[in-house]
Amino acid sequence: MLIKVEKLTKSYAGQTVFSDLNLEMTKGEIMSLVGPSGCGKTTFLRCIAGLSFSTSGSIYVNDVNITNSKADERPVVLMFQQPLLFPHLTILENVTYGLKYGKNKSKKQERIERGLAILEKVELAALSGRYPNQLSGGQQQRVALARALILNPDLLLLDEPFSSLDPSLRSSIRSWVRDFLKKEGVTALFVTHDREEAMMMGDRIAVMKEGIFQQIGSPKDVYQQPKSPQVAEMFSEGLVMEGFFLSPDHLTLRPKTSLKAADTEAFDATVEYKILKYGHTFYHVYVHALEQRVVVLSNHEFLDGEQVELCYKRISLQTYNKNHPVDEGKSSKKLSR
Amino acid sequence: MTRKRKLWMRLTMLSLFMLIFVAPVILMFLKSVSFGWSWPDWRPTQFDLRGWRVVFGDPRIFSSLWNTILIAGVVVMLNFIIATPAAYALSRFHFRGKAIIESLLMLPILIPVLAIAMGLHLTMIRLGLTDQVLGVIFIHLLPTLPYAIRVLKSGFDRLKNEWEEQGAVLGANSQTVFWTVMVPLMTPSIRSTAVLVFVISLSQYVLTAIIGGGTVSTLPMIYYPFFTSADEAVIASFSVLFALLPIMFLILFEITLRVYLRVIKRP
Ligand SMILES: Nc1ncnc2c1ncn2[C@@H]1O[C@H](COP(=O)(O)OP(=O)(O)OP(=O)(O)O)[C@@H](O)[C@H]1O
Ligand SMILES: [Mg+2]
Image (tube, rainbow over all chains, first blue to last red; front, side, top):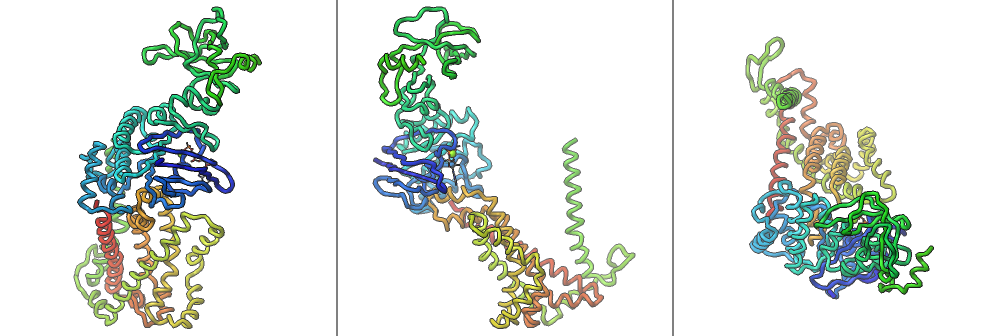
């Protein structure tokens, strides 16, 4: 394992932010970390980077225990939400800062060569002599990325690096960054608020809530088979019930009048509005019994405000813990309340 | 319309600035090189370097100029050495008694410095610090340090902690980060501190007189007695000399700063 975090706990003055976090990452893996605001994502990254110290637990990089090393001695680079380019230095000087003042100093000629090479890679070599305030937000983030990657860190931590960018720039730069990280084989831990971004960037996704990792798994697993109602609420788009979960791919809409098939259950729902996307019609419906909203794809035509039935096969109900279909008796008992 | 108004605004500001800051210096300079320039003549009628001759004719002038510059220079340096860590600690850390320390630091500004100096005088006699430059340097810290700490602290307050963290994360140790990131970002505060301290030290008369005991002569020591004379040209010459010192200091300081940044910046 390249990265291993064991039982990491952090508390501020008795107030626990997170406890007993375990995480393992292999080389070249990109992990997305999602969670609601204030759940401790930034704190977690800061502990790994050495900017704050954990209360207990240990962190290993390449089997070396770095739990008590100082930030500048760790083979880890953190990219903040803002690019934080040093305003008194040009782009090239910013990018070579770590090579000049870091622990593995290299010769001047080599610094400049490597700096220009990495700027070439982030497609900014032409701007190497400019100052940060002469660059756009996206360009600044790319420089910050270059400044981090030139150090060949064992682990790159990214704390919502795109959240200060506007949506269109954001979506173009994140796919660019993902391709770049993959091409360079960089191991990265990526914090985001955005579910779509997490799925797009991460090979795996870690869902953090209430100070623990609720689930760590591939985007598909986390999306379709959430391990707790918290994960389901936050990450999946299905229906969350006490004890059970319905994945959105198992939901269908039909007019209220039709008859029920033997193996099918239905909720009463109201169509709130519809949107057209990717050549299909998606209905936003409100499920009265669960007080939840859900988006369902349908080929039928429904009107806004129409009463409909949201159907699912009993067999597609799943529990959180075991992730396999529930036997029928149990599910109907629970739902009949 | 708005562009015109902007232009007017600028012109007004510029003329105000000239009127308040530049005009007196020019006037003073003219006065120092003129002879018998008085109402109702709108310009000097006769030029004469007598004022300057008197100033530079004083046998103590060069030694006191040197003393003044030496003292002010060392006081500026000592201020940075003492005030920077103090200001940093006050800005970044929270500890018990911080508010008390901060108000204690303001005391030399609130209480007449003279009172404190009188008290310190006895101690300094015992330590053998009186009647020499070292003692004067020491006593000049009294009216300067509070300002230096104040200005530097607000400079650190404005600088986000993230700059230091960014440096650390890139592998630079805290000392390197201080010299290569903090100092460049703090230049406005550093510049204000330096000039403020220099000017305060420059204009000390009473403190220098008490501790220096007349042995340490600085520019104010030979300048103030001339106020009793009615010779306007001499006073004007002294004033111009006085005004030139901080300006020259600022220029020198600016050059040093530029050179420093140049060295830091190499890729
Ligand atoms: N220096 C500190 N002292 C005390 N409590 C802190 C400190 N820093 C963070 N916290 C607390 O730790 C918790 C987690 O904060 P953190 O910044 O890690 O959240 P986050 O998941 O990054 O949130 P967001 O998504 O909004 O950025 C918060 O409740 C916060 O109040
Ligand atoms: Mg955060």
